[in-house]
Image 1 (cartoon, rainbow, N blue to C red):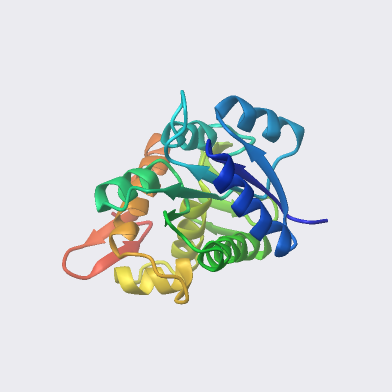
Image 2 (cartoon, rainbow, N blue to C red):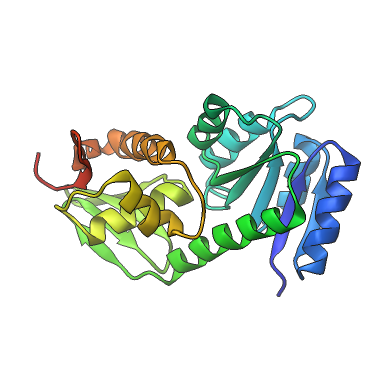
Length: 233
């Protein structure tokens, strides 16, 4: 079955241009001009990836990304933000809202397809990863879910796709310090350009994800060196 990509943009010309490039690359492209149409498209069939414009009428793309990351149905769907906002603070805001990557307008079809393939590849690799348990945390690789062990209960951990990849890498490589550059290579892939600041954003998101389970202390900052994952404080 073709991978379905949902394009959420209020400019018909951009939607048509992107859809043409996607169909040429053998993706199934569907359109939405605002939040309501996007929700209807998701209800019809869950997409494999969402291309989301920052500026939308009514509900902004940023707010939509936050909403989808809190929804169990769409939490694991990769999101690439399409934005005319090239400033670092705006990009960080998008990453903190849970998007996996961003493309700044104007962009070429070649660049967009490269970003899509990279994000799809990372998501597919996640699905193929096995189970891992460390301390009070357990990852079910087949189900793509994380659980926190407390007493006799296993509480599900609500986690976004990028934080899942980061956590899986940490849990399979505990007690070792990794620089931001090394984490980018291992988690994001060396072939994709992502700023080192991105790592800090997702480290904060991962800690926030683990905080309700009192496990945020496992993600440790090693001053002047990088980050370490440890079951000890």
